[in-house]
Length: 222
Image (cartoon, rainbow, N blue to C red):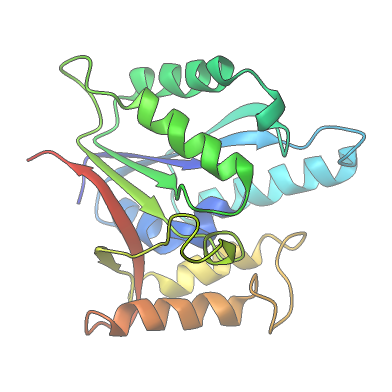
């Protein structure tokens, strides 16, 4: 469970929605957690004031979860499909080589957002076992309003096979999520604190735990 972890988030808040409880648990038990936010909103599609606010919210949430360091790659949000794929590969590859994480948490390939899909693929490129040091464990996390909005039986479905107990860190995850005042919404919107709590309970009871986060295992070298 411990060692160095790198969480790759397409946009600020994906890391908290998908694995905030795991981040808090690993950091609290002595692991070293880094978060890489791949994209940044770009004018005119995104207002400069909102861009700065979201960055500030993310930084506060990361501190609350005891993230060791936040890495901002600043590629254009919602425009990765127009960005040379080699540029995304290069950015993530450099970061993985620099940090040498033991565990990599990445978005799921079946997410409805194209940014998530492209980052999944580039994360695997960055984590290729071409040298003696590479991420031994890769897990794909689920993001509410992205992972569950795919097309059933057409795109990849999220069928978790790894569950991490977050009973003791669920409240910290919810507190970190609440710091994203610009992104969170009122229930019954999916991006609500009630939804995050309910999903944690559902994932937990699937493995007889009070709360959990679920992942799809991509690789595990023992």
